[in-house]
Amino acid sequence: MPAILKGFIDRVFVAGFAYMYKGKLPVGLLTGKKAVIFTTTGASRLITKLFMKDTSTKVLAKYMLGFCGVETSVFYLPEAQRYTSEKEPSIRALVEKGLAGLN
Image 1 (tube, one colour):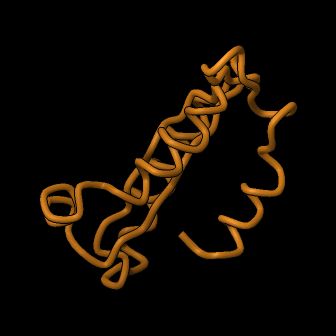
Image 2 (image 1 turned 120 degrees about the vertical axis):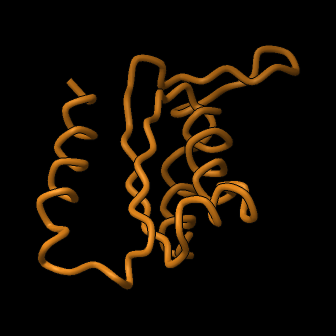
């Protein structure tokens, strides 16, 4: 993820606001909140899943937002360097689907 995004998360999702510890166990304080992650890749979905193991989205969805209790949905836009105007309707549909899940 871009350093500016990681820095934002580190500064905003802090103890006392996003999580706290009860004894030695962390407790997310943002339960009931939802987030949608849209991610683009240069590789195909198969390559991203098999070889890269979806590491970037796991870190954000599970280990950062999930740790704080945020329910996340992830949507992938693979092979982004090959997008053309013909693919725009399918991209819009994916984004609308993702945003509809926030309601």
